Figure 1 (cartoon, rainbow over the protein chains, first blue to last red):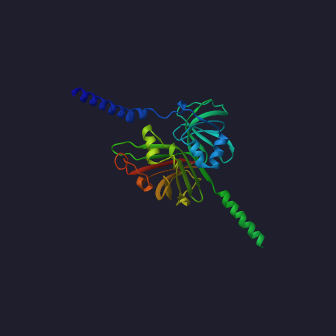
Figure 2 (cartoon, rainbow over the protein chains, first blue to last red):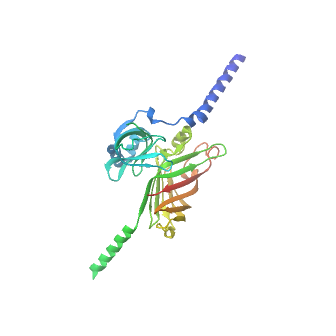
Figure 3 (tube, helix red, strand yellow):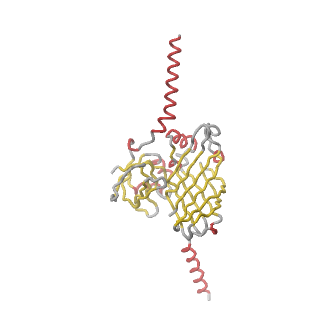
Length: 136
Length: 179
């Protein structure tokens, strides 16, 4: 009986410790990384057209998913946190793909066409990608 | 006689339209802080889309909920799934006016106190908001900043930890540098 109680206590302690580690340690240091995810491959023109045609349907297809887009760089800037942002041309003068690269991501300053992979967070003036990496 | 008057009126209207300037940014920053003594609940969004018209003071901020980043990934997941339901309601928006815009000289560098009134929509629920802030003009470019508080439950957001681990009132800090 004592053995069973000891085993149950040890198991409980182990589960509690695992829970504490996952919530307070692992989740602080491990963030979502699109590099490890399979992506939906789509052109800048297609994703913008899809969002303009029906935002709800487009969200069902792209929102919160890893998206891989090849496009022509219209603009590169830095946001207020100092992270690099890219605007990829869609062919539509009013909406493009706006993407924030992961901190520390480097990009050839002469690259005019890039392939990026990031998480689609929705549609404002542009289709927005976050936490993106440069695939090539 | 009617034609010259009409021409002058149209010319005046055109001048008025051209004299108006639209400032915008896609990299505005909004911080959300609902920390309690038990938990640090802070998120930052650096992809805020904002537009402002200098003559009328009309101002719009739009933010995607999934663009808010937390230090803790699990907290970010809970914020999206259990509280803001961002898959169903992906955006938050403020539409309003800088009500004392006439007191701002956009051609003169300096810091100007601003009053902002409008409607804030979060989680699909709209509430009137009035706040104050600072408009800093530097080289003809405005930068607006301000802090205000909202009651989370006023926006139909419910959850087990509101009032305990999560503060009942969240502090919203806005900082947008326009182009």
